[in-house]
Length: 86
Image (cartoon, rainbow, N blue to C red):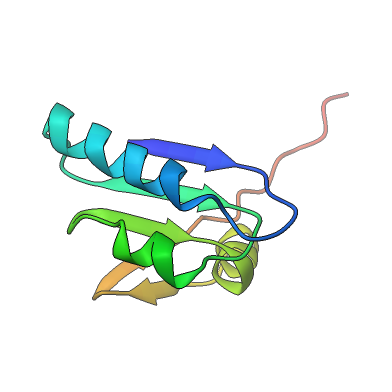
């Protein structure tokens, strides 16, 4: 499961808690909370074991195609070359 949100500052910890509850209720293998803001300590305390928060430098690195490692997991976006249509 993926949830993506746009924030200007610190994320709302309740959003993380609600998403963690959804992951647990749906018995999802894993969940990714991807956002543009800053992650406070309360948000991390609301995480469940299989919820991964990706933001800030990790989000920029992921979008630029770099390896992003946390909790022994690797996330990588492949840089695809698209041909211009004529």
